[in-house]
Image 1 (cartoon, one colour):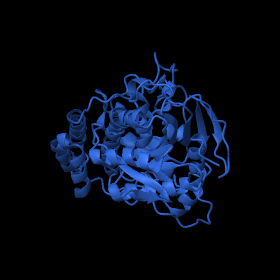
Image 2 (image 1 turned 60 degrees about the vertical axis):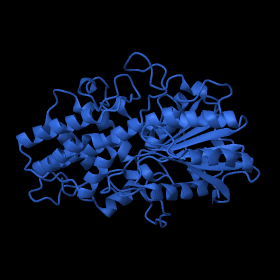
Image 3 (image 1 turned 180 degrees about the horizontal axis):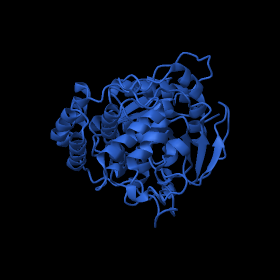
Image 4 (image 1 turned 180 degrees about the vertical axis):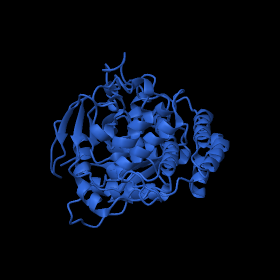
Length: 448
């Protein structure tokens, strides 16, 4: 029996890390359900980081309910939740998929400041987090055990150097060959040879402090909010491991999009030639749905009629034809020709996961001095500043219209509404907004 959300049919499509469909019966049920229900438009949503099927389903249930309110009653629309293996560290708050209580303090940065700076916590690895990481990256289990042990040691020079060695070994052991969004961007920039361990870990510790995390609870605190140097440095090493694991999930999202979702859409289009497909992705799921364009065939018209990215965690230059800092273009340059409709990029300046920590993860020493006033300019994410050189408009009301163009990108600055969230991620998961559902519906031309 087909599930339903807000009176519309809902299907699940599960991929493994290589982009293979886990249960072909689900794919068959989707194809048959489209035919049986006479579906003309299929909205497929991909989560980003995730703590299990239950959380992801609740995310889809809440978000598709918002979208259903924007759809014309006469449109025969079906929903698909895309599932793929990604993992949010369990010591980070799970994204709020339940409706938040109404705020009376105005929200945003001011309310975060009034609420105080949450503590950094111990630099050691929680046993549950360690098990999660091993399940996600089994090839790096030996290195993860070594890293966990070293994070319990005093932060002397020898410990820090050994940590960097083990982090590099973990990176090498779990390499998947996935490409990046830019030339020479497939590797984690902060692990380049010749970099100093204390400098790298200190950079991530300062990044944590910049998002609102406090180290002041540690005895012997130095600068306000930064705590003692030793504990701060070990926390920076732990944060580097966190960002490295997320980086690898970002790469995995590209693989699943290119080898999994893209071919799945192609097959659906072959079975249902008139089907219009609309893709939506949050965080790493934004990279997944964007890379589906790299995995579909060059047919005209394309079955993908719109894509909307919500706080997307990949390079703002991915679709750029001519990069301002290197020869050639982004990894998806030219792929907008495979989109028979618009690409909407929703972003927020309150997203500290993407505005602060994401660019640090890809920062390469060789490029740090070559980016002008903003040393992180080359590494900014779609969800923090929007797509490079695309037209930008502020997010509108729940009945807004937008000047979307065929094969064109339109940035939607959602900083006025995407404001809520605790450090270190900030507003990264504050996506349950009717105004954002309106963007999806109008880009897909599904409104009344």
